[in-house]
Image (cartoon, rainbow, N blue to C red; front, side, top):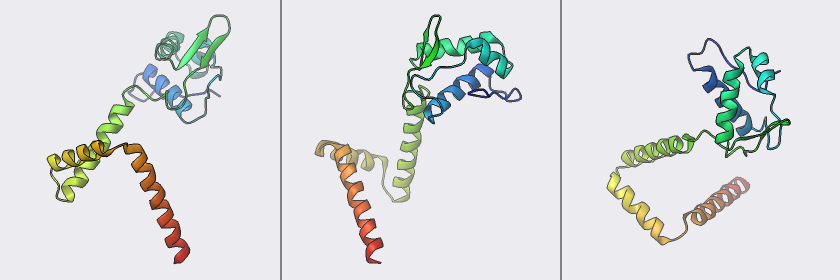
Length: 150
C-alpha cells in the first residue's frame, strides 16, 4: 500500500495532492524522521501517476528541507511533524486566530484599538508564554479542585 494516495477525480493537481499527502503523513506521525520513502518509480507505479510528477514533488520537498535524497541509497524523511507543515500554514492559522480574537472582542464590546492597546500592555509586562503556562496550570488546578470538591 502506498504511503499516500491521490484522487484523480479531484481538481487539485496531482503534484499538489502528493505533496500535501506526504506532508500530512509526516505531520501525523505515519512517516517519521529517517523513514525511507519509496523510490520515485515505485511510488509512481503504486499511484498510477507519471514518474516525473513524483520526482517533481520529491525535489520540492528536498528544497524545503522535508526530505533528503542520498544518491544510490534513496530518499529519507528529515523533517519533524512541525517542520513538515506547508510553508503558509503558520500564516493561515495566525490569520484565523486573529479573526476569532477580533470577533470575540467585538462580541464583548471591545474595539480593535482597545484590543491592540491591551496586547501592548500585556507584552510590555513581561514574557507572555510564561504567563500563559501559569494561567493554564491555575486553570487546570482549579478545574481539578472543583471536580474533587463537587
